[in-house]
Amino acid sequence: MLTPQWLDQLRTRVTLSALIGRSTRLTKAGREFKACCPFHNEKSPSFTVNDEKGFYHCFGCGAHGDAIRWMTDHQGLSFMDAVKELAAEAGMDVPAPDPRAAKAAEKRDTLHDVMAAAQAWFVQNLSSPGGEAARAYLGTRGFDAHTLQRFGFGFAPEGRQAMKEALSKFPEAMLIEAGLRIEVENRDPYDRFRGRLMLPIEDARGRVIAFGGRILSKEKTDAPKYLNSPDTPLFDKGRTLYNLHRAAPAARQSGRMVVVEGYMDVVAMAAAGIGECVAPLGTALTEQQIEMLWRHVEMPVLCFDGDAAGQRAAMRAVTRALPLLRPAHSLRIVRLPEGLDPDDLIKQRGARAMEETLGAARSLIEVLWEVERDAQPLTTPEDKAGLKARLMAHVDAIQHPDIASLYRREFQDRYSEFAFPKRESRWQQGGGGGGGGQFRANQPRGGRGNFQNGRWQPQAESTPESLERLRRATGGGARDALSAAVLAGLIQWPAQVRRHAEALARTPGLDPRFGLLLDCCQASGALESDHLATILVENGLEIPGTAEYSGLRFGFLNTDTGADQAAEDLAQAIDLLVERPVLDAALAQATARFESELSEEAFADQQRLLKRKLEFDSRLRQMATRQAASS
Image (cartoon, rainbow, N blue to C red; front, side, top):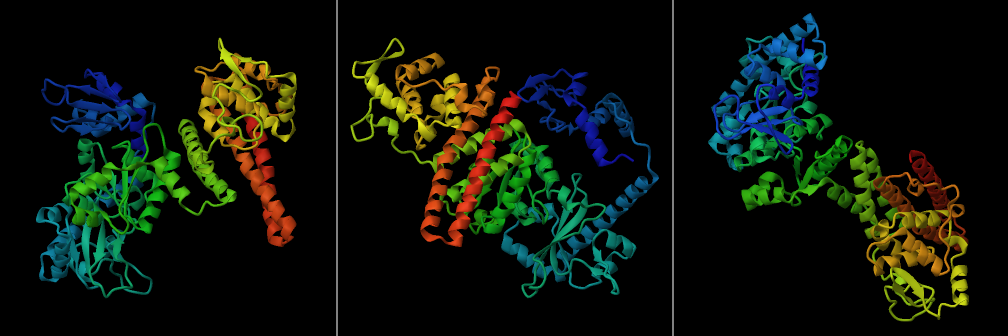
């Protein structure tokens, strides 16, 4: 017996364009291939082949399928012959027939008959006198007759044995296995759905595999508002998307797939002319459902309710998607006005407002940043450090290395701009320690002069005594190993100076040599390593040497490291350099508080920050040694 998992594996091993290209001339068009349709005569190409999604489609005649369908419809093979031929090419063994699996398949076919009969009965009940309450409810939703017929609305009457009597031709055991009846120990089985408006849940082929029911009586407060079928041999709620068999063709036309919270939202959207909508079934969006969406579109749009529960559901979907992200495949998020679901928005403002809302969908990274930034107050250094930790935890969940690196860079840039708001740089002030007017962009600290022929020429006022004072100013704790390593990295990779100038300018207590680099950044065009080194020397400052950053052999200091990798490694080191003063300030504040209060709370706060300081130092050394080893 061929399982769906085995068939999916077979499809992934076949390059569809190569298979079709043997008999049809294909032309590359972006990420797809185009051709004149081999299933009907045409002069201009409307036939496309998409290897990423694994299907072909003709916009002229509607021909659509995967590799197996191509072999059966175009090559004329039977299903099994097509599978055997593709498996031979893919190097896969066709599983031997399994009598138990064959019997299970036969049972599934029989359960399909049960579900079809149940659906017919529900639809019949809706038009009966007993279905008056259900019809009245549908009248309040404003659905037209076409929508009611298209989605197969029905009604389950009150009565614990009504379905058993109506479907008496099927054994009760089958009704129980199909999820239509409930069996409880020491009690007679009874109908699962009673007094509910019913909707069929269908598979990709449009066959009924489960049901969803909405309660109609407001008095029944002890029962769930919506009730779905349990998992059965036909139905796996984590691998099923409601309305996918209708939404997929619509998505091929619009290039968009919208995920809403529930099946009534799907119906409301379809009634408003937005047919490419699906919904999970009582659970958060699963990894399997995300992969199903990506088979049809690269950027599904999540459109969950504007209340707190809807936003929590959206965030659960986002966090589940992070490990799965791959190039060009992600999610976009729509936030509806608070308290509104799609049906409410359409009724109040019309279908155009919904289209405008969908058009304003935001990227996954924007939503993550806003959610974590607004999750709690950010008033203390510890609060801000917690924000960064949460953001980096999301980055760590991303398995694709390139995407993780890009997310890390984006989060770090946003965090730096937020945590260290821009203010006037101390290197834009006049030299020395006090007042003194605006400092000229081409004037480094330590004396007046001018750039001539691309080099700094000090004037006579730059006496040996003034340079000696500047050399003494560079001593002490500021000139530590990390600062020296970053300085050496910026000199080695001068194109990175401008990239990090703002973050460095906002960081207090840095080595004064950074000031000269930033002044050079403001004063000249293209920066060169020799130029920067010369300016340091001519202003009496030393070029960072190996001894200064002994033990911190970052990868960006290795001459064999590529430019892109060096830029990434250097950015991580600068992030640590920028983060350190915040941590040091918090630790100093906690220490001062403990010394003045001598309380257990103050002591605990100081020890916690001290532990974080030790962890910071450990992380610094681990990063340096790891980057050096990888280089």
